[in-house]
Image 1 (cartoon, rainbow, N blue to C red):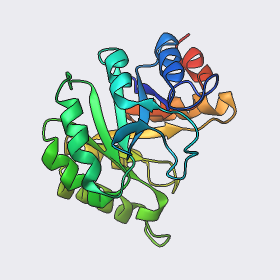
Image 2 (cartoon, rainbow, N blue to C red):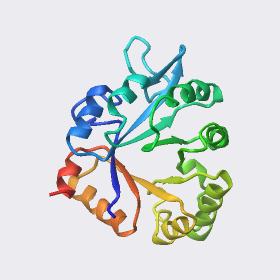
Image 3 (tube, one colour):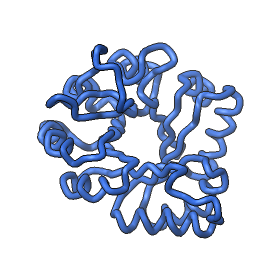
Length: 223
């Protein structure tokens, strides 16, 4: 099967990121799902990416997002928090909805186990950034670290970027799939022809999910 195409923060080509309009448009344009960021701010689960956001601006509330978009496709919720304080209100909210197509993700490895404990039935995604690897690591070590950390954390989806460029390889995808771990990567907003090439490359590697920033990619790969 081809990778799921997940609109990164919605349709940011036309609308503000993480906004209701961006999410609506992404689904209308044919995205398989949306990625959104959630923070616990002043007793609210706000949909906002930057930690140092402008407090004078208004942001979507996660409850409103769930009320509108549950059932429309994959919802990939990145927990933007260094503290477990966000988890109880998030659990209380999510308990009211069908969770079939929800994935919780984090880039903070220390957050994975607390998230897993409170949400044992959900797919948990771990975002591996360049800070998780060292320049001296060869492919064999990169693969070993990624696979073994995913197993240790008992997480289901490895979010692997193309940096370092020799990390997202057929070998890594194969090793993760052997452990029943899904593989997720990202296509940045670059020249459309290069985006399509990346999509085809990831498809050939059997990557399971792709976030993307440019809505033109949908039309280009689904003609």
